[in-house]
Length: 330
Image 1 (cartoon, rainbow, N blue to C red):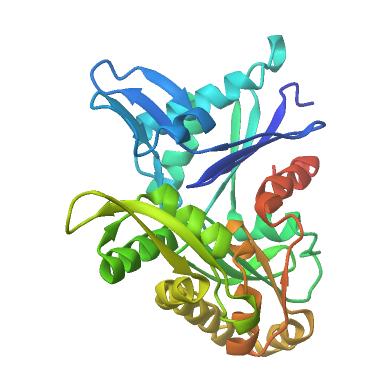
Image 2: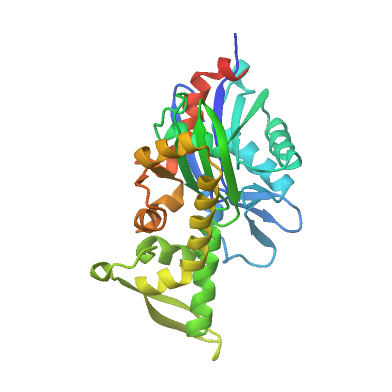
């Protein structure tokens, strides 16, 4: 009999979501930690720390400890996990939880061990690691246990995972380091090249969320005013950018994602390919919310595409379903 609390963690590059068995998703905060550069003391974690990104004085560092879906800064990741687990207020005999944590589909065993170690050092009693696309598929409501093919495209902050699942396991998959963060960088580069204006990550993310589009539809053109530093005069400056321009900025990265889907489909056994033509592709993760992405994929791949209704929380909810069946994993 397990006497510890069971916790599922979607340790994302952009956001960290925590699911507690019996309670649902109890925490959804940005994966950002701000520390004092001199004393290495943790000052803020999550939402408070994200507010500081790009706005900190010299001795305060706002760090995103995960890069491309894996741990880039071990100590800071451990700090962040400890803080989040403390926030769950686990008391007495429940204080050391059993943790199920998600990772991208093709990370190395070293990276996998780093995630496991960080969870143990943050106070876990037992750690299980599952692959993200599989958990996302479960969270999106797909029945992956049947002998028929399901395809998932999970676009997060640091990685995009494409996987085809059957009989509860991944048949073919690929993971690429092109996702939300890379698209933000594309927008920064486009604005810099086209307007000689320097903008920060947060402004780029706002552009992506508010007017970003993967597929240009003349009837839905929108514009947005953005401010940054003019590279010629060095002074603050404001310009107007349109949704067509965002498509242009993101085109190359989105084509890489389309190519990854194509590669996975080419490696799929024919029987499963037939299932996918009828069942389509399910989009999960924050990137699934990019306007027109489903349309772009449908046009390029000729397969129906559906956006999961809880796209942002699919992985966390998937960990919840897997915790219910933890005895099967053990």
